[in-house]
Length: 102
Image 1 (spheres, rainbow, N blue to C red):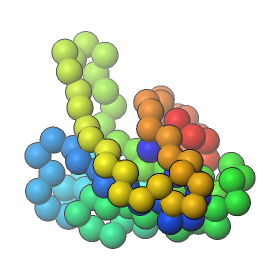
Image 2 (cartoon, rainbow, N blue to C red; image 1 turned 180 degrees about the vertical axis):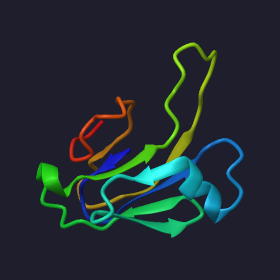
Image 3 (spheres, helix red, strand yellow; image 1 turned 90 degrees about the vertical axis):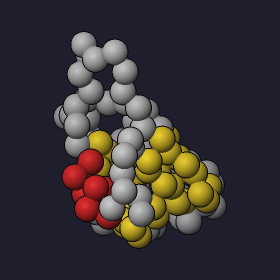
Image 4 (cartoon, rainbow, N blue to C red; image 1 turned 30 degrees about the horizontal axis):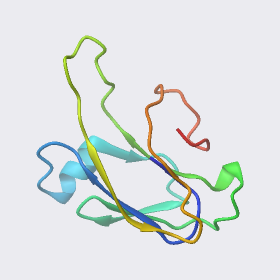
């Protein structure tokens, strides 16, 4: 998930996440200077929001999706679209730059 305007807030819901430690095991804040985890899977964009690539905030899964797997799922709830609503949800390779929207 990529975010880049002030006030954007999302909540990540992977299967069976029950504790705060589950977030840290399943998700990575790839740009900690621009995203803060508030607990319970809720992430807030905290960057300057000037729509420049270096100010993008990224939250990524730590598990690589197995292409041979029959299914894989996660949920993202958009709690606040922020000032401009630049939230991108997508899939990318493990080496995809965290300063680009997915």
